[in-house]
Image: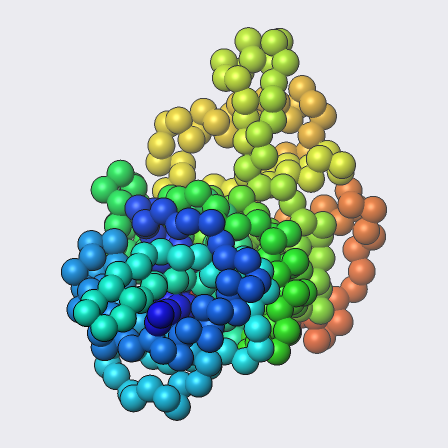
Length: 348
């Protein structure tokens, strides 16, 4: 038996594809340990041709990221990039995807779980980008490679992201990072997992959620984590007033009675989006919610964003405190990274 474990960027690309092959149940801890041991017997060159022939794998970019117990056993190849796994996998780290056999041996193809992929990616990026990747895995979108649409039903336009269901949850990321030991990136993954917010529907929601809720010492505004796109059931009277059954505020702090609506450059171009905004405004008046609006230009202008967000701290029983020079510098650094970092260029 020889196992080939797809990991790192390759695993992220797999989970971010909306028409990916359905994964089976994850392996338990003993099965994961055996798979890592069998990875030493995997012969990638023999697997390469088979993967190329399979439509569900042929789109994965080369070199493929492969985890092995000892990469010195394998020769360098343009088809594969090898990563050494130190320590054992927690339960649920691997999903079996396919199996095939040739005249001499039987092989399995496995993929790192979204939670393991998060830890692996954290070993290769900084804290903020790791948090963005975590939000992406826990959100209802995925960055499209080069803006390509893998699923013919997906509508991305110039946005550069694909709509797809969340692959995991912030709680699962935090639990897995706590269980993982002796893995590269696990300390950064544990830090970043604390900032991850679920249910974002686009990269900009992720960026805004991080800017609002990250600690002030790391450049955020230090607000409690908001609920993103939470369904608000409506009473019969509210349905008749608004003409819809439910509404979904972009950002909601139910205990504080605050909702925030973000208007991107393309959002206001659609009549339905404007109608939704008006419905949410009416609902905020009916339910005594403070509705705050933030548009693209205000998000990009840090001074304007500060003038809008800082007063909200009173609603959260957090009196505005002075920002010391290190906090101001961190805020500017975070804002610049979110606007121009590696996970921003694909946003139209």
